[in-house]
Image (tube, rainbow, N blue to C red; front, side, top):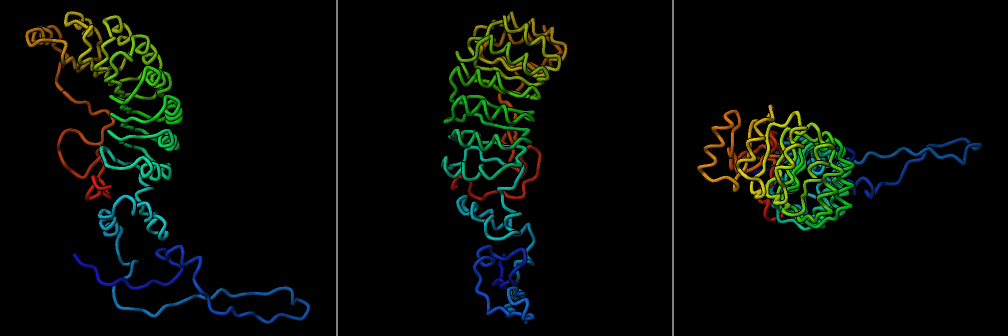
Length: 337
């Protein structure tokens, strides 16, 4: 598709570049005559600068969808400048979005910070696999309406920044903090400051850093959990099952590769009346798995290898939706940001 040369617009409309509004040269101003007694006062009429019409298509004639399609070809560094061109482009700028997925993009910490520091209306955000910073988490904290946050596999931020972000994002319903570069201090900051409103939480991958007392704290703080994944936490034992019984809404539980939990002990989890699925990969053999399925006929066991908590897409299906929402702007070459 081709677009003819764009006609220059009149100054003062929504498509007028901001620098022209500030620095456009003006013809000599006309002054109205005033009476002798009022010579200290001058009334100036601001001139309206018109340009000769030229053939072509005006920016005003281009629909939002076409502009967004053009923006999709821009590298991230240019997208940052788009919002400063004119009012309309600022309105269409990706920095005003509510849903953003930058998972596994090639983007510098500085560029990522320059994006997120301008975002205050985010509802869903995924930065999976990226190197972050304390400043980036502080920028995320400025989005009080955030409901889904995926930081799976992220690194580069302190426990203090994590604490600030979790304390500020009190509306979070889904949170994925799995496999981050966490110390035991990070884990304690997470379980002590995650909002009580969260219903889906992934804290898998913390080996020795997630302890049974952390599970107790987490359950007491988040009583409405429906989906909880604590896989790859090798310090967990059947002693923590008593806390799972306190989660009256728990439907999905992940304990894969928690090697101190024996297959026989898992039978106790069948006493949780709301439990629908149980992921215990790596701690049951094929023969014990079949026996466990027969013992717990109402629970689906090892039915999913991957978690969908807070992730923008599920499975390998390629479409233009994230979190079930159709995208208006999709970058053509996200690896070249």
